[in-house]
Image (cartoon, rainbow, N blue to C red; front, side, top):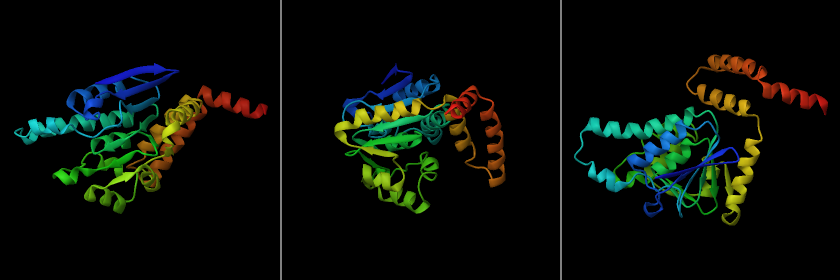
Length: 244
């Protein structure tokens, strides 16, 4: 269901159901969560074939039509646990999106820390068109865009271009289709050149302050500041700076 390989210290995870446009089924979700939880490296997440991910495998959802509410909740919680695992992962997770990232596929990309998109990529939450709701991802979407923009995306079901997603603040960078792989690699190389401890502490603090009051967030910053000063990366960085 997924391909996992480590290259130059980076874990590359590929959703590997190209014949299904990498649709999410329980097996793929379980494998992906296991891969994320089992890795302590920077992760690049992508899809095999022409699309990143088309969302939930609707044939599987149809087969669950007779399940009760508790069974549906258990199924939904698997995806929720994946989102939480991605948020708790100590290193940055980059979604490299070619083609379509729709519904749960867009949710998966949004759950990553950074989205790099090819210029022809498309994004959207079309769940409303089949009477469904992009439920778990709302917790992340509300933190990425304004309330009104989030409402528009989830109630119209519109599919938007990579450039529009960039303008909305959902995508970090848009690269030309022809140079996408090279540009993604350059971005990843630049990020991996940064201090490992600084990246880890920055990600942890940023998300840790989500539900905090202003004063509590400042205090959390004080503690992280002190921890960062005691790391070897910081000490070496100061030495290099002072020698310039």
